[in-house]
Amino acid sequence: MNPEQDKLLSVFEAFELDLEVEQILKKVKRDCVPDQGVTQFAEELKAKDQQKRAAQEERKAQVQQQ
Image (cartoon, rainbow, N blue to C red; front, side, top):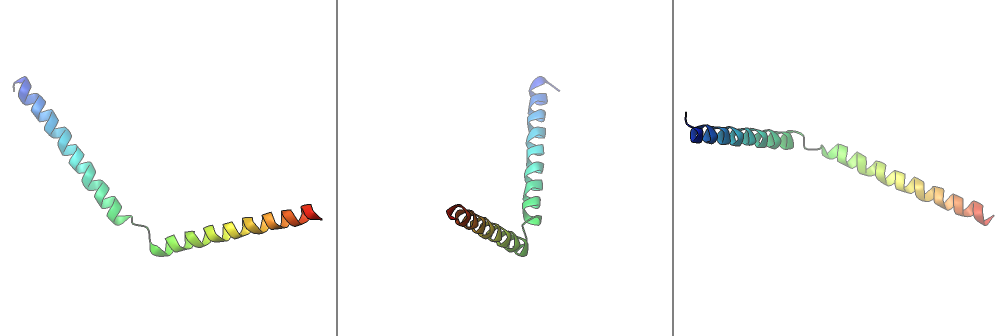
C-alpha cells in the first residue's frame, strides 16, 4: 500500500470506531432510561429534605427569639 492508502485506511478505521461508540451510546441511553417510579421517589425525598430544612430553620429562629 502506498502512504495515501494507509492514511485513508486509518481515517476510515477511526471513523468506524466513532460509529461504534455512537451506537453504544444510543443503546445505553435507550436501555438505561430512568424508571418513572425511581424519579418520583427521588423527587419525594428531595421535597421531604426541603421541608425538614425549613422546619429546622423555623425551630432555630424560635429558639433565638426566646
